[in-house]
Image (cartoon, rainbow, N blue to C red):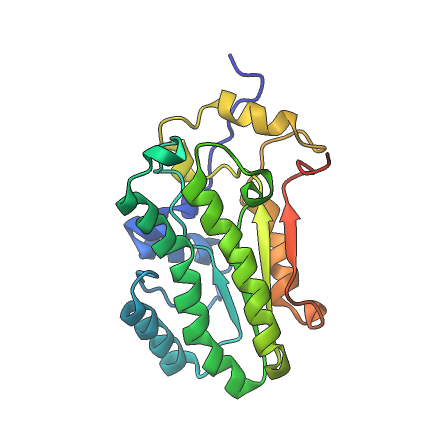
Length: 233
């Protein structure tokens, strides 16, 4: 029996894949007056991304904040890198890294025209650890950090800040239904942290809000690790 029982995962974490209306309902329950728009987008498809950006501009007239969070992770079977099929490698890269490229590239001209914007890319602390049997995922998230730093140098003069966040293993509804994410799996992560508890999606909210706000207008090209001190070697 694990000493760390898993809390109930927040329902809105993966509902966007099933029914975006459920995500809207969850947000409205917390913020009744929120003005919302939801749209399914395949971030690995250039045309789908551009259609999303066009829809946003048509409705709101501007784009101030882009959070690139889509990723393939929980559905992956861990295996030695020699055994990773090429199509699986490509699938991970197409969503986790190419998706960040497509979305950032589509948002950049809009933000340049405003001379202001915040791009926040979700990476992972695995890229610092070199987690075994996850070479495609680790590589994709390392690429997210490198890409963020590269374009931060290019578009900082246009008033656009580009940063990344590297979370630790975070418990979500997706993990709740995937094999392998048992309480024992989280025990290993918890025991390595200075703050010894399971990481939840809300643990990332403050950092995202900071990077999205004017408080971080002179912060760019940075990667902020949010993992409860797991990297304190």
